[in-house]
Length: 97
Image 1 (spheres, rainbow, N blue to C red):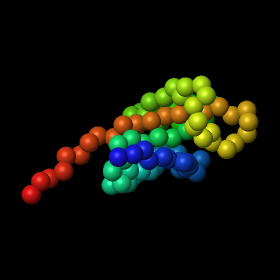
Image 2 (cartoon, rainbow, N blue to C red):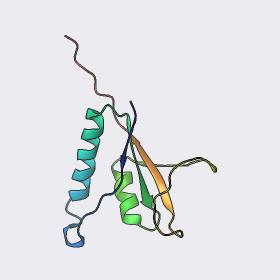
Image 3 (spheres, helix red, strand yellow):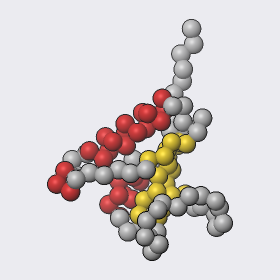
Image 4 (tube, rainbow, N blue to C red):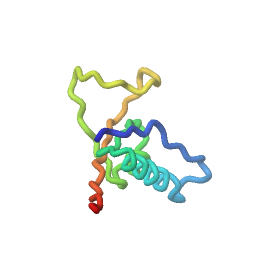
């Protein structure tokens, strides 16, 4: 068990709104399950409402990180603010033989 982390989802401007990001996220979820992870996490720029909406529609929720928590911040401009978002992955029953 563990947490898989999506470091970046990027789709060319002209290719957006075609479901590509949703498919990329679904593939990341599949891989996380294969690794035995129980959740998937990411950081999302608070000033990118389209991305926040996309992740929420895919089941991610904003997680409040306690002040003083030792969590690595994304390396960007100091003025950038991010949501920490997480999705719990469904447990897939394993067949017993």
